[in-house]
Length: 250
Image (tube, rainbow, N blue to C red):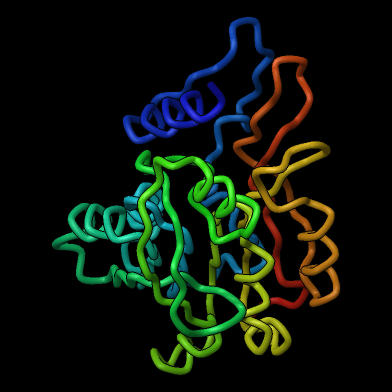
């Protein structure tokens, strides 16, 4: 049911609609999405957004939204699973400033055999060992060999000196993704990071505590939470956490 709800929310968002629980008390800011220009660091308001990384791009939902918000930015989209990648490539066809890569960004480079759910929005489609074990035991998952690449290596290949926005949504693999950008992070060449993280007993997403400690130790400051998902009892399940570099870009 949770997977279905998430799927419906994302489908509605692509149409400019929001699905909300009956009786919810909403404020204007509750409708701000992670691709909205207003959440980017106001200290850099005079510096145009030039480079955006969409890691775990799926079929291009966030990539297209970022393109609408920042039409002149160069967007690098990463999706390792072949079926999703083909849809991503199709949905961004004709956009010259969007570059799609059939790769998984991680803390190592190479090849990896993985299992994947047939449902493209499934939260089980992750490189995390626990989810891979569940898929393998399910008996209804397909397998494929994907390419892994460190973010620092990709930046050297593409001659990228600074990433204005780095968004990662990899269903629990996000710390490994960030570890692959160690050189970029240590040299403060990432301005804004948006990362999906979980709270309390959520086992699907990267724990917020791990994300916070990792980024805080590298000079990133927590700026807020967006698109938060709640349990039936009102408790937060997961959210998109926004971090800014503590030093503004020159």
